[in-house]
Structure formats: structure tokens, C-alpha cells
Image 1 (tube, rainbow, N blue to C red):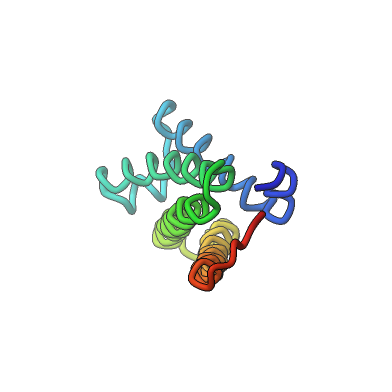
Image 2: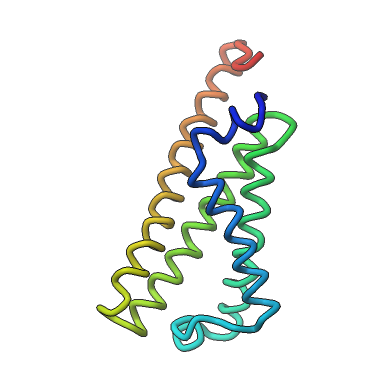
Amino acid sequence: MGSIHERTSQRVYELAVLVTAPVCGVLLVVLRVRPQSVEVAMPEAIRVCWEFGLIVVGVAGLLGMFWPGQLGTGLGIELAAVLMLGAIAAMYVVAVLVVAGAQAVVAASFVGAVAIGSWLRSMEIVRSLRWIIRMHQAGIEPWP
């Protein structure tokens, strides 16, 4: 499975986002302070799901990255997390653009990059899972 350095050295940005997401989620929940765009654009139930989603995404994503068992299981958990992260980031982009319009171009660009990066990472994971399946079907153990 490799050391922590080997498993994360090619994914430092993903690691940084996944560590930051639950911190932001906890701060939103505990401090009860939300961005104005989220307050205005999202109904209460969606806001609560968005806040707790940040926590779940970060914890699940890190769990998937460092899964001690089978690689495919860890990748599956990570896949679910990065897909959800992309959706949560996109929700914020829409909210900030709806409320602030052109004034939100910088925030929307940076958070939009997180969404796009998450979806690109999900495509990489799907390719890796397909490779693992092909190796398994061929009777080849893909890792030592």
C-alpha cells in the first residue's frame, strides 16, 4: 500500500482540500456564521446539508486516501467523496454568483476550480478502478 508520503505525494492539493473541508464545515456549524450568498441563495435544509456535507466529504475523502485495506475499497470511498466535494463546491459557486454576480468572479473561479478538480480526480479514480477490475479478471494481482 505504500507509505503516507508515497500515497499522497502526487495528490497534495487534494489532500489540502480534504483536510480543509471538514474544518470549514465544523466552523460553519459551531460558529453559526455563513457566507451571505449561502444564506440568501440556499433554503435552510440545503444549507444544513451543505455544511455537514463539507465535514462528511473531508472525513470520507481522507479515509479513502488512507484506507488500510484493499485499494479498490479505498478508491471507491475516495470516489464518493470527490464527487460529493465537486457538487458541494459547485453549489457554493452558484450561490455566490447568484447573489454577488460579477463581483464574485474571483471566489467563483477558485471554488469552481475545486469542483472541476474534484470531477477530474473522480475520472482518474474510475480509470484506476477499471484497471484493477481488468487485472483481477485476468488473474493478475495488480499490487504486491
